[in-house]
Length: 602
Ligand code: ADP
Ligand code: MG
Ligand code: MG
Ligand code: MG
Image (cartoon, rainbow, N blue to C red; front, side):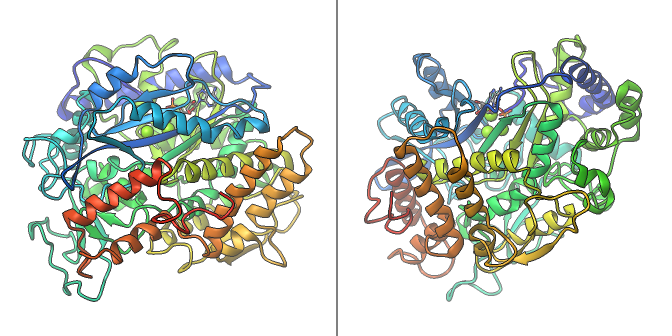
């Protein structure tokens, strides 16, 4: 979670008066950071993950969300600093984010410590919750917005969201969060509108009849799961990774290289087949979060194609010769920019850096959403609040992070993945991405493909079973590329992408194996075996031998004795599912309940 200023938040009517002020000073602050840090070099490949937990209450065969973030975080602050754990606020008042206290180092062996660190973070968090509270890692809470889904007496329809389903009490009490929700609603002139297709089971009502309400705004399809509050999206949990690049330019290269991987890692991490108590005909959260913070007015929607939570629109490398030779071929979608901001950046010293100007003037088409009265005027040389105000409310698939001070370098963040039920799976996905980043750097891997293809892939990942039912566009010649080689692209299955084709494409898992076999860095047998079991999970998911969490959750519901094949998740299923997720999360029942979810080697 980026910025957490204290103070009096302004209402939207006031915020909008300061929008240009925030943008202008945000860019001054950015230019100051660029001036100070553009020559940083030789920064080590530090990296760290962020995991988001839900705290649930389980009592008397009933599960509900426990909205005690302030108390729990308050006590978690007392954790001994010798433990490499750290906890942070999140949007949902039932959520807690955990990270390592200090990032992981740049040795290959350091990746081997990730899973133990995740386990320590979970067990530490668990030791700070109440006797009936449990810490789980689940992307979307099954019955969020149904009945009394959280431990609160407050009703739905609160002033921030006016939701038909979710009480405002599930929102983090820090003024930033209710204000963010309210200002998004006021900016767009109505509540957010989220809809997701219903999974058609044998007894699912057709046409679909919403079990809670038939009330919905005009234009929202009646045959879909309708949601109307930020919490349905921002209340989902995910796992993110941040990498420090060697320099500003190397970080830009890394940002570009990671972008084509985002839809693929979204698909392989799919873990959210249920929204608002109904089985969905998709397995991922991304478009739900996207719509949940979409602040565009109807008029803007006609000219601004995407929400501020969405996939990226342009590559930004300055040094990569392949992009440099053919920028319009790869940056092939129209990128909306703020001309005033572009001019300010050009006059501020970036006239020779059109892709960076495009990138930031694109992010700065957005308005600030929350401004604290006490922080309108800042010391632009030493503060980055106004910059972060816009930057950290552009929630895109990858993020390019300038140094906030002189102790941290340029970083690129990988943001698409869904949180997994077990730390083994979370560590496997994260370690895979970290290893892939090392491949990218070592072999100068070229994933560049027209960004419209990445966009297509992102859409493709939004189906039920995005591993088997769709194919994805990839560049197939990814090694030893020069500006003169003819790029090759193909639409491949997830199996082919991860496990390789016999002909053209090496495959992502074999690429990582090549790296592990060729490295001269020291690696213990134990860590190598751990990596092999991580790769087995990913290869197994891609080939279909191992289910994604979404498939596992869906099957759990479909086989539950009280499921009526009508797509509805009742209280009993919700409880049993949450309990199962909790148990699997702490290593219980892997051989019974979780059979098949994890690879044999584990
Ligand atoms: P966000 O703004 O995305 O919430 P956080 O500050 O929570 O970001 O940190 C994201 C991750 O970045 C954490 O895992 C943290 O350990 C890691 N991190 C911190 N410093 C560095 C660094 N210098 N290089 C790489 N990663 C870092
Ligand atoms: Mg977070
Ligand atoms: Mg964070
Ligand atoms: Mg983050």
